[in-house]
Length: 429
Image (tube, rainbow, N blue to C red):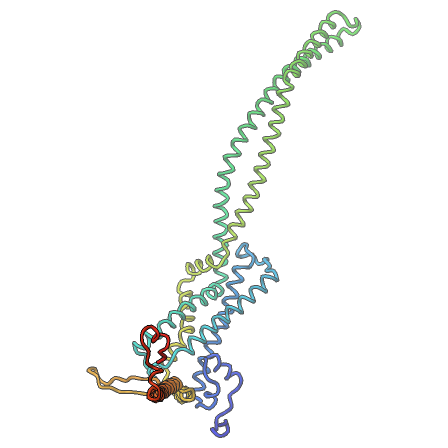
């Protein structure tokens, strides 16, 4: 059989590829009418496009999962080469998995009763495949849904990240504020002690300065008389006040050094708290930017998308489940009868034979099918014949043996007659 004899155009390699995607027999479709060829090419195209869309959807999903996290509207984020390679590999593998599942679902879905109507029995038989197609439709549509609404999702996600960062910063401020208050109280205590010391020290210094000023005034007015008793008395007072001031400084030196060290330590802790607060702000920003994954984007898309996500889902469910319903609605054509004929022929060639029986039941005619496995029947028949032949040979052997023993007994009965215990050892009969 060839294309010229049947006056059928030789199919293009793309058509054969689409037939293969539909799980059909290329050899039989090549000699089938155009109607059958177009039907299975269309089904194969849907299966192939579903796998292709699954690869794109999976690629975007994996890029969202493994890609860099940051502000949703920041376009300066760069994806590393390793992430791109890994995303590409996962996208191809995911697309092939969905393509293979769809191809298996479509190829395993039969024609039902061969009419263009879907009966309850047909729908019930296809339910497991429909459920799998539903799950696959949800899995494929979700990433593409957020890709279509990416601009709107990024805008809303950026607002959420900013508000969430502010919320975390407020919580961080409340925690650090309690620590800072304690440090500020300690700092105020040490500063108050040092200020009090400076005031007391200033009193001594002012007294010394006042006495020095009075001495200089007295010396200026009476410098012609020299350094007299009054000046000496004033100098003694100055020395006394300086001595008191130095004594006060010596008495307070230990406390002052301790207060200053404590104040320096507290200031260091305050600066340290400020650095930790800035680091906490940065960590809060990292945490808020972590809400840049697939789940949050899907959640936002359903919040702002309105009917759009459901329309996209419905479209993909139609694409995913369409081939199943199409096959149940397809009437049997030349190709389908050729497939049945070829299957029956292969069964017969391999020793499998189907017999049809029709019985009259209380609810009407009952159609039953019985399969005969000729190789098994032949093996069974051969075994039965061997067993019968073996039994026949065994029977003939026993008869001949009986005749031989009878003749031996007639010739010499004494060899076969014994008494007592010796009969147990000598009787070979």
